[in-house]
Image 1 (cartoon, helix red, strand yellow):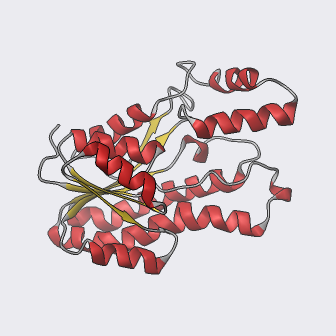
Image 2 (tube, helix red, strand yellow):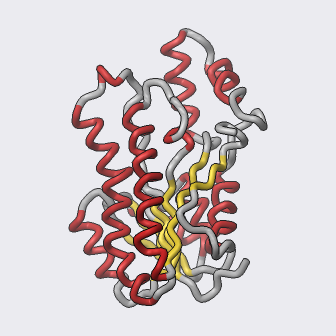
Image 3 (spheres, rainbow, N blue to C red):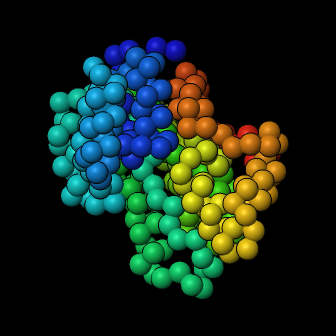
Length: 251
């Protein structure tokens, strides 16, 4: 699929899934703008992409920061919005989670999606064309012990997406959720390390126990998530959907 002539804005784009999605969109021909709170990884990614790439710093949980971002891109036609920015939050029983920890997860993972959509959807609706992909997680659809704020926030994103699709779908704007399963990388390695410490087992045992839940017996890769985002854009009839990419974790 060619995305030539389209401009994509990817939040949380400096590393991890955001960077992988940005690379995939760029490879498909799109002009890409990545945002995040730290300039260094954003600048490094843009340098590696070369032309048709730009970056802006933005804290998606802060309305003033999002408004500044929208103003700085007022001369761009953002027709693809990927709300990927998110944090993992605490790994602890709910009764041991501080209010500030809970609020931080929802501020970034849910409020951030709301603020970004509110800022960039009006122009899409006016043009009667656009695509929004909100990155959720299979953890919003299945239990993940000691991760209540994260799981609850991702289920909230799924609910936000399905309702928003009905609000803007009639104007020709597609809104969908991409729900990756566990992705190979530093975040999951951290989780395995913490689980091993909690249970007194090895990190390898914690990993094996986790991936055994997937039909394919493995985690997905960041590159697979990027490819899925491009594939979703190739399906013009896709609206209000929640695409599960989990190697069969919730099959």
